Image (cartoon, rainbow, N blue to C red; front, top):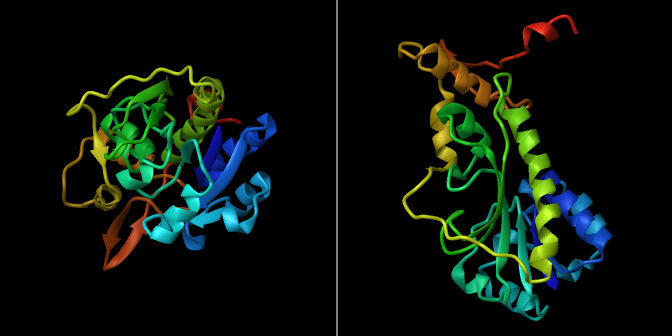
Length: 255
């Protein structure tokens, strides 16, 4: 299988390293633009690919980029924490489709910040491998793994466990995908949840005159505790005051 890897973040790096260790053929690499890139240098170094075959993800709609990728004669695309939406004309390049790793238990928490919404809304947390279609995280599901949300979780701790689960699920499932033995199931439309980036931005401001239940307020503060990101805040005399939580069980207090 000739692979086009569209990757970002720590999970993208770990997947790239494992594929190289296996001897899989990564013939092209697509990264976020430099200002949005995370672990980009590590991914490039790990893949060991020539600069001519490294593409900017923000340029996937430009004909010259599409032509260059078509000339690579790729079989399958693999999207790992890749933030750009892929259009249907781009998806048609890949005879075996494009597989995405999404850090949520689909159909719950399609879109942005799944770790936040599993805490705030109490939806199942987990990770999913699925094919990409014309929607956002709506394609056929290949494999899934639930990740429990515990009382001391913050947005950061849950995100870290979701990352580890993504890598684990990928390693379990990719050999079946690579040899064409994997099956997938259709997602039922109209089921689950979906969130955009701006939904979290609306969540972040704590309204001092609004009534919250203790659970609602704690859930927001937990979900948005993810240093070094500022997270939730209230406004005092025109200035934002940010809040973070530290949570631990009683038998951990002396450690």
